[in-house]
Image (tube, rainbow, N blue to C red; front, side):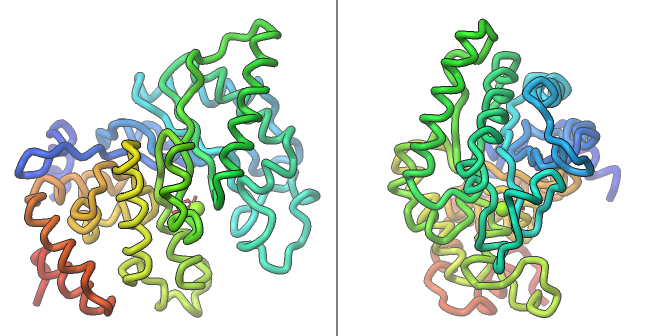
Length: 328
Ligand code: PEP
Ligand code: MG
């Protein structure tokens, strides 16, 4: 079994009826790059940059961040790297940012992710500067976490343009044209605004971890309600569907990068909904690739349509398991 999965590494990620599916890695630490390369990832679909801010009392400066990002690009051998701006707050914390973050009554609903970046522009400017510089060395894309409204994307684009002007004036080499800028769709409000967000974005990345949390009002880390955390809830699937349709109409790529993307149980459904890029923990990549290679996309699309007509998540799970050949 192990060897069989390993041998998948060199085989293409393509469905039985010939559609290519891009399988990417989610990375949280520099040392994970090797696992991603070994697993045959086509790039990094989500680089969580929080590690740069963890276990220290100061903030990483522009040079340090540039060097780290450039290192990821180099070690990924020219494959695209999607770097997400800082996503602290909520369940993710950083010592040096304790002050601005404060002690919100509802951390998951408070000052976090891009909201913090827009409140503390220096923090965001430094990150964007490092990303513009690293993007001169390789295919780096920029991803914004927890976007809720078009105004936030417009603001970030303004800040990015200012940062670019400043760097050019300093004579620093940056990417030209500027790197592609995309947003996480991980809040129901963003998913339902996907049609309004798409014209401002070069790509979408659907974050199902938070999308499930916010859609079903289930704290993703709370054991007491973990049994209610349900990626197959029709409301979640409708938000995914709406987002994928909006991206397709706007002609921008859309990936799924929550845990759902790394579970072969959901592969047929996500592809059936129109997703063609999945980003996951590198360890899951061979399992998902095996599922991609085993399925017929025409059939998966037909099944997804039937699933989207269901109102009960238990029924959806049963239909999916049946299609996956897991039915008892
Ligand atoms: C998500 O929310 O699905 C996601 C990929 O981001 P994170 O898990 O880092 O919040
Ligand atoms: Mg998230």
